[in-house]
Length: 471
Image 1 (tube, rainbow, N blue to C red):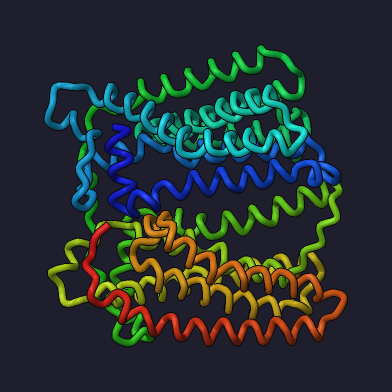
Image 2: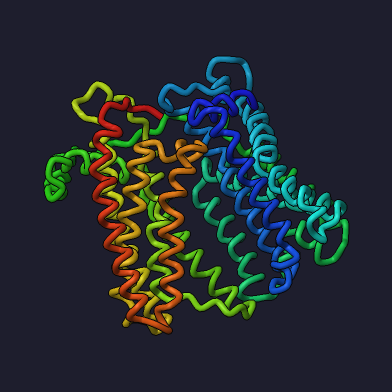
């Protein structure tokens, strides 16, 4: 299964692109660890450990929804991909057995792919910092256990959801309540919930043993709760394409494709993840900044224009979801090109994200008392949204989920995205102290981004019109 995982990665972006991700993690952790003597002058070590372990838990939650993956592999034809996870359909082996092996494979793969490069970069910086080899070893253990707790919890939630969505919702609410006891209620300290972090707070080895036991318990429970048989999903819908196409008549020649994409989005049940994939990071950015400013007393004064600049750069996940609803190989025998489908998805992307973005800016403007800045924030937000979507569509087409793992594509993408983001961020800091110069700079930058977007959108046809549909 490890070989299969690596072949799958290489088939998407090649061996170089697959190997670039852990190298990038190693490099960034090396740089941050080497500069830690400077960073820790203004930041407490406990805060760094908290952020690191929360990130590891969230990462584990992100890669641990394996039961849902197993159901999709067993009940749907994923393009031309056949996985070893499908063995129980043909061979005398229980699905729980294969799923248990699949879980161990994923854990080993992502530990090698990300956790070890992360800690390895810190270890390489030992001669350049005050970090000790023993501290690096302990950090590896606690981050590893935190990752496994997050992965096991996600695996368990997805397995429970296959049997009862109500039960899964109850478990999720219980977890949310436990987190609320830490913040904002402050009845528990973070280490009492994130047990590996508790070791750093108390130096009590019982926290590590308890974390390892909980990780094993969660994963074992998830495997035991897995269903052995899956019925292919099936639902019936009334014909609504022509009616829906009339609603999207404003998109001219793309109306049929936009209608198709909208119906697929609704009927696949992906509408919720698409919205949460956009709104979640936006709320997360605001929550983290608010926490650091109000809860930790850090002087972070970000205005509504800054949040407007974040809109486009946080919308990538939404476009990625829109390109991942279902396989498109059947369109190879239809009179439609990849470039047309890309444009249709971009139209749907703007229809979904623009109202959410405007409501988000109005809410932040009202909370911060900055309603006077809303027109400028809206201009900056819409221009960055259009620009990032144009760059993503032009560079990745319908393969945003895979092509951004390619080192060359990711490098070009970063070169196109990061400089405008930095310029918008720096100019937004001047809004309160020098409004008119900042507004002039942001207005000029927005015009440039929109002009560049027009050029990029025009290039989607030449770039993707001769490409074939596929994963």
